[in-house]
Length: 192
View 1 (tube, one colour):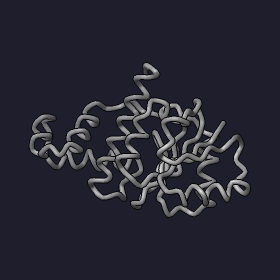
View 2: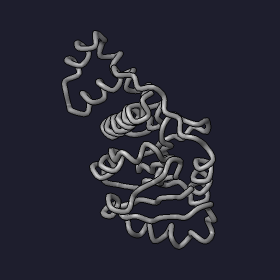
View 3: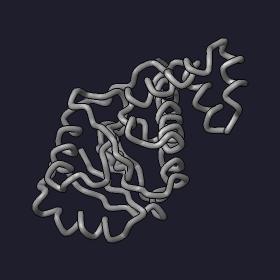
């Protein structure tokens, strides 16, 4: 199993690389700046990917790569996030401020587990795509025959399930959309 550390912050990559002797992870570690991801990024099934990218657009582009759904994904977010200790569905999300010792623990733990993707609820997917596209809430609630309150409750439920309940509404909505999109891609690739 290999580990891929991807970031748009060169200082973060240099810091992790300097600690690599102390980390002692099984397998090789590949450090990639976001500019070189397309050419050198080819994780095998079960490889661990640490995605530490500040830029939302760049993070989305990387999360849309077809090879990413085969990997065990650990994502760092600047916003406050909650990582449940039970294995969450899909990628693990931890705060950017996570101490190095804990980050290493999560990398090792993720390498020992198999990524779990739950079936994608197409109604949830549609709602998050529409919310991300700034469609009016009234239009979304009418389309799905739900009250505005039910749409907000569903958005909150999915945010909690994916571990990003501490994010503000816009960041959480965009991130949930990206994760749901990955879930859908995983099920298409694996014909589940």
